Image (cartoon, helix red, strand yellow):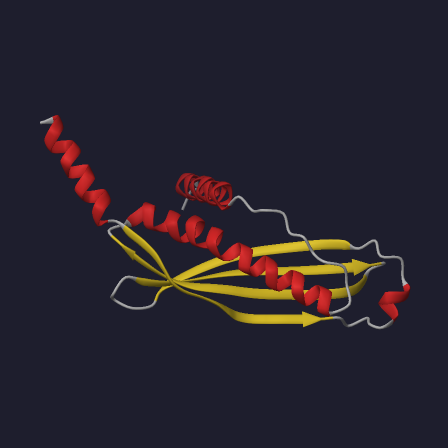
Length: 164
């Protein structure tokens, strides 16, 4: 019986597939509204980084588009030095993964693959805009996913407990 269970889990694992089909830049924007005067100021920016992911099933063959959006705003003395936003996307083939495991793959594995491409685009455009390189720290998408799941459970628990 244990052998049958082991064979069943091996077959299930063999049927699970996750493959990169294509990686591409979906949208890229760079603005430097305060230039050239911003270059005269002491470069001690306040930097804000916003990160978002979304995914959509794009066909019935098992292909999903995942889009990682990173927006960085750098301000000096409350004046926007630059704003850069990149939507780094990829098409991923996923088969044999369902439910919560599928959500986890789309929210963690795919963004982990896309992040270095987005980071490179951001760095290159900031330098081409006349600013120092932006070295984004690695992002733990697994921790962000776990946090989102926990927050989702908390809000579900709260809504169920609230009187109607």
